[in-house]
Length: 129
Image (tube, helix red, strand yellow):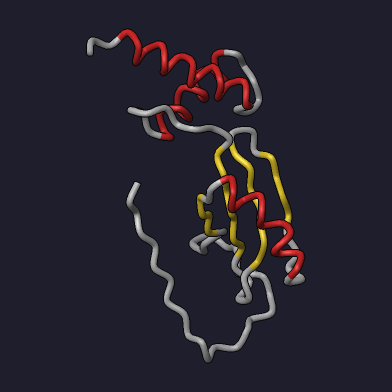
């Protein structure tokens, strides 16, 4: 959506060699949305560099977690859906969440996403052109 994140680093700073603090007020992790093409390449590339990682299926997205050299947890995330033209990612996610709650399901699944996109497309098709 055009947001920009700038990270300033001190290249002379020594590696903390410990996990980043997780107390209240600290950053838990940074998440970056990446394309499916990039996401599919990440595990092999991290392994090639000897970087340990954890891959998770979040229902509506996939995530790969690893630590940067300063101990900050990084999340490379990739949505499991293509947002229909004329809508935003949040429209799909909010509709999928509404369906999840109505169905009393534990978490958003790919079925909720597919049904949400179908509902949004039907709504768009009913709009005057």
